[in-house]
Image 1: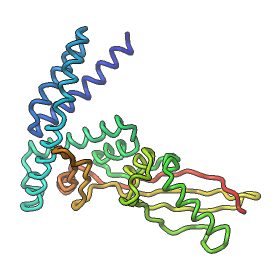
Image 2 (image 1 turned 90 degrees about the vertical axis):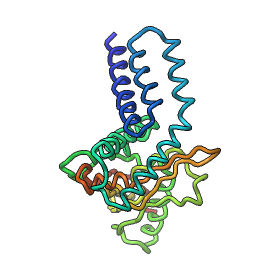
Image 3 (image 1 turned 90 degrees about the horizontal axis):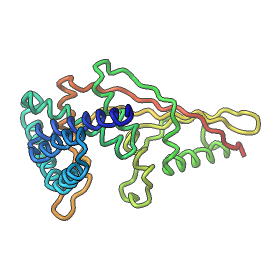
Length: 263
């Protein structure tokens, strides 16, 4: 009974956040559907709840277009007149949009970028340190470390690396796994640092990724654009809230250790 109550409270909160965000982004039909869903969560009418949820899914394509159109408008406004041109309602809508993106991050099993996104709302803006080897899920990261290890073994590279830039080549998009995308969302644009220490016949490798967590004024993330439906994220609108001191950039540091053969 308690688990069921927690489940209802959690999804009521999530759908309410999405509903208010949709309302502020002028996606009124989806806001209404989400609020009806919240009400139905507390009833036993499973059939009607399922029908409403399906209706919400069906209306997602025009919702995506509406989000993109709103991005066009807000991005153009900010670039032409600056962050101060945003109304309070628009600022709140963008702020809640940041929360909604974090929720989506959890939903697609990318908790690291979701957590990074939420911490931008912390007014202290302090650095965050995580002991996590999640980056090793990425074959791209593994290949970088393997290549550097070969250089250490041959003596052509120092045991303590300089900053190794992390980027994922768009031309090799099809070669990447879902884990690559999960890692890239959190650390692309950051730097990898490696420190090799001899332990017996092996090396213990201290690994660190540092990423400057902030929105970039000139970056646009094109999620998809096909069959008349488009969705993209213009970071300029979120950068505007950084300039207005609603969001607070910081550095995230991910630490982990590896053991590799010295020969």
